[in-house]
Image (cartoon, rainbow, N blue to C red):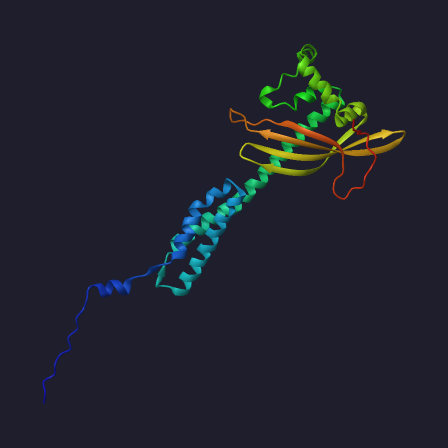
Length: 254
């Protein structure tokens, strides 16, 4: 009878390390990276894709980790990426909408001031609102003297009041009622905000109530001191909003 030979096992200390090794989900890493970059979405709507990618990769990672547990790790990273991306995904559009609303509201207030000056027969002040904010003169009793005593500004004011829209608003005066109708356009660049708004001007003529629309284009450039100031870029009367039928307007060319 042959003597029994004990089995010999050759062990490697690294075997235990291999058995305990848990792979890191690459999606978790990607989700965290996009989550850390997500605040860039507050700068421009074009960058909203960053938190969206953070949400995508983080959710993908959590799903894989749950399915392959315990061999796959990275849940903490995925949760961090998910949390940051979710917060920014909500904050970025909210901030954008609030900013746009704020700019539109400022534009309405500024254009209301322009209409008021024309209705009150103060074209010199309305003309000043077309100037860049840093070049605008004080609205005091000396403003008329500035136009009266300086040929170039005087001719500029004459040309301004002879434009059809300004002339019509001056002629109607207090008989007109100006109401905000709609924001026709709004854009933003690195240097300024631009807004176009429509206003309905209503007046009575021969006992009949009539209305026409005026498009006012405004710009809010960024100034050297970091502040912003509005200016009237242009105004056009007799325009038609979408879906409105043509009506008689006192705005005439020439």
